[in-house]
Amino acid sequence: MTEFELIDQIFRPLGAGREDVALGIGDDAALLQPHPGHLLVACVDTLVEGAHFPTSMRPADVGYRVAAVNLSDFAAMGACPQWALLALTLPTNDAGWIRAFAAGLACALLPANVALVGGDTTRGPLTASLQLLGGVPAGTALTRRGARVGDRVWVSGSPGEAAAGLRCFDLDAPDPAAQLLVERFVRPTPRLALGSALRGLASACIDVSDGLLADAGHLARHSGVALELTAARIPLSPALLQTVGESAALELAATGGDDYELCFTAPASADAALAALGAALECRLSCIGEVLVGSGVLLLDGAGRGITYGRTGYRHF
Ligand code: ADP
Ligand code: MG
Image (cartoon, rainbow, N blue to C red; front, side, top):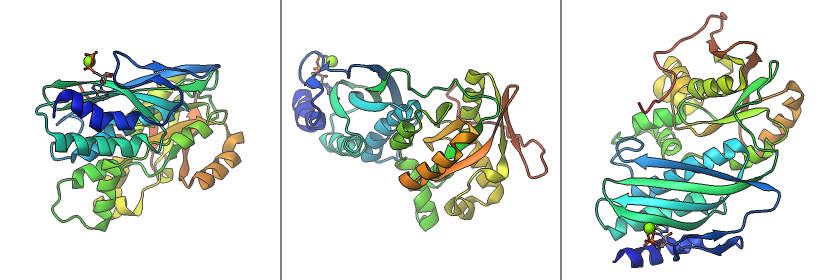
């Protein structure tokens, strides 16, 4: 298959379904119609084989992942994704691989109602880069700034599961708990509905991609506050506890990456609304700490002593 047949047959179908695409895949550039009164939201994330995903990861999971990591950034902003552009670099023109990749990509883009409107296909070491565009009503976006002293700190889901899943990724015969963790690693759930619903409720928000302590640290720095987290309030899932034990479970929950959960702050007056929201979305929301005067993130044990780890999260350099 030529490059053009490939794009036409495999990627063009992912561009259907949005009326705000005046011109999609096929011309020199896409023509898109932003919503009046909304700010344009844009982000891009690149996955390099061996650095951001294991070489043994299935192509469908790579396709899913490159969309999911970007959708998670939109969730953290409370934004609504609309359009995607894909830059794909491949060592060979393997139509089977590309079809599987596109099927995984569709699994992430279709539920979010995102149209693929363009991209670029090149030869080289396996790298997938997706740019996401969308909107948010002006003045309502969630940012890393805005946490206020006295706010509470919340996290969605069960942090640490994905990092444990990466550890179990190459096991020959994972038990059901390990399988669940691997699933959390390969198919993270971008918290888009939660992110939009947090507009007007949360004071600041970030998605947990590198690790809870590391990402909470970014939120603290941008907001000019300190965060005090209580270890006992960080939810540790049964699968995580069963697979790695209590102390490693806490360390992975605090420092492991790849969860794509949301960490956010909100005033105490939002407690009831957040409880109702978690129930409505069937998404666990846990209050794990408080916003204080100062800087940095402190993790406290049951006796009120600080817990420190060698690293707070993943770093590329
Ligand atoms: P140009 O040389 O003008 O950049 P290309 O041959 O790179 O054109 O692309 C032709 C069309 O196919 C463009 O509309 C481009 O956006 C789209 N396209 C190329 N690669 C991809 C891809 N991997 N996924 C989606 N669309 C793609
Ligand atoms: Mg091009």
